[in-house]
Image (cartoon, rainbow, N blue to C red; front, side, top):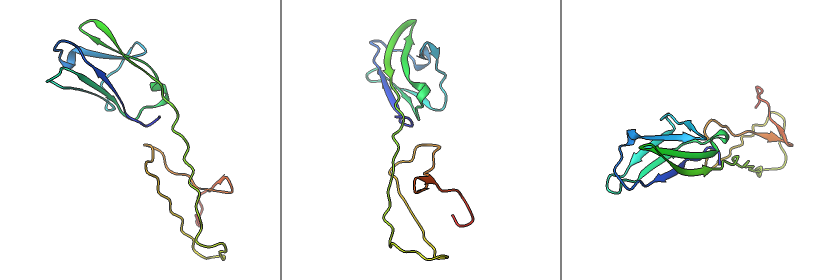
Length: 131
């Protein structure tokens, strides 16, 4: 899902330095941006590639080029993060004008860069001096 971290494993049968491995997404080179990490297990020579906070455009075929040989890693399918709706039970049924009502919600995980939205009668609440 969008926002998740994906991990690919590469197991060359020979010792290869990390700086000799090139990563590609749909034949385009991947620079080692802050959200792409490569680590090596020196005991097994296995290479782990992690991509953090995936987005919809990240779907597609991933390959590595190791000493001139193209090695397919995986085809990544990115699904939209599902919408989470949390209905609330109010502490009472009747409220009076000028009475303060405080609502609170908790989510196990909020995707990066997103904030929960509040709705009343299926309409988004607009920020006002009272809300």
